[in-house]
Amino acid sequence: MKEYADLGGLTNLADVFPIIQRVDYNGFVRKCVGLGKRMDLILQGLIDEHRRDKDRNTMINHLLTLQDSQPDQYYTEDIIKGLVLIMLLAGTRTLSTSLEWAVCNLMNHPAVVKKAREELDSQIGRDHLVEESDISKLPFLQSIILESSRLH
Image 1 (tube, one colour):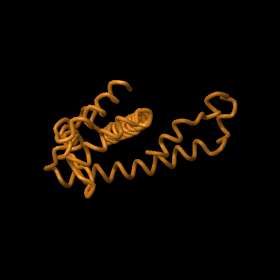
Image 2 (tube, one colour):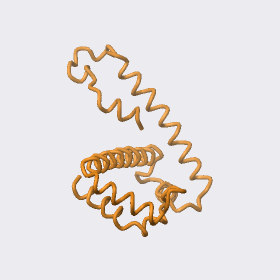
Image 3 (cartoon, one colour):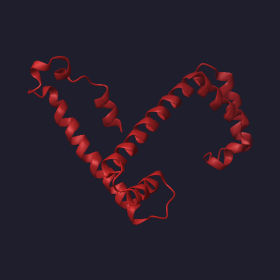
Image 4 (cartoon, one colour):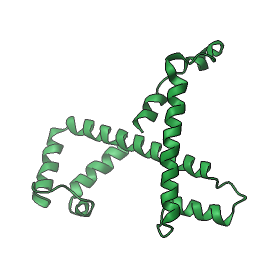
């Protein structure tokens, strides 16, 4: 995902200057092709894994079921891989950006950090990490998350 983000932020000079399309300046096209092949192998492995275990309730399994029931429609493996890739990229980027904003907001409000830490210490303690099941015991932390989402 990091490589996709890095390549997505670069400009291919051949897009700006079409006259140099035959020259792979800085190996941009080579990097994109290599990343595409590696990602295709990973996604194909994911599809094969879901094809073997059909009892899962996942988006991939639902798409594979549609592929089996409607083979003449648009549910090719390339389409499924593309959908999974888009969801991975979008989810990864959105989550990391949201976390960055939440941390920035907390750094600007030390009193809020202190109150959140007090809530964590009193409800969870310092001896283990917060788990998803603990979130219901942390209303102040939930409010921080909601406010950060509202702001950004």
